[in-house]
Image (cartoon, rainbow, N blue to C red):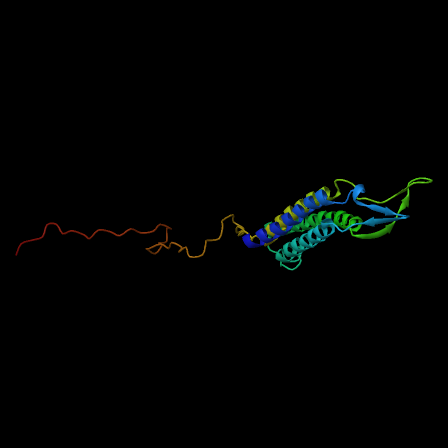
Length: 210
């Protein structure tokens, strides 16, 4: 369990770190060159960083889902407490996937606008053309969502893999633990329901002399 948490957390945190780095390295309007009616986007590390962030986030989600039994669908249900924990784990897992998908959309949009190449300029007025640039804070939002998705994925994995607690018997008593010997009476019970006690040996009195 600890190893799975470390692996999922490492992938998710690394994805978020790459997102923060991509925010600092993204293209600015000064980096884009206009050639006629085309915009020339130069090569930059942002595109590769974002692609790696998306892959790491996807790996973290898949590992957490597989470790949790495919969102709880691949593990048999248990008692009442186990079923409740399973439902909560499934809900948390679904929320983590939603956060991961939103983060991936932000990553993908930023990767497209930071990919090197030539694109047609758009008209911003009658005689003015401009090049599309990713807005500030997009990669930061993606990184934060990656952290949230990773936290939820770890939580769902813990809930779905936690062992089921022993349920009490109908009379309210818990079943005995393995390896604990049950005490038994040393003397057979009598008809009145009380256990007899050993009686001291009778002593002789008034013995006659021969």
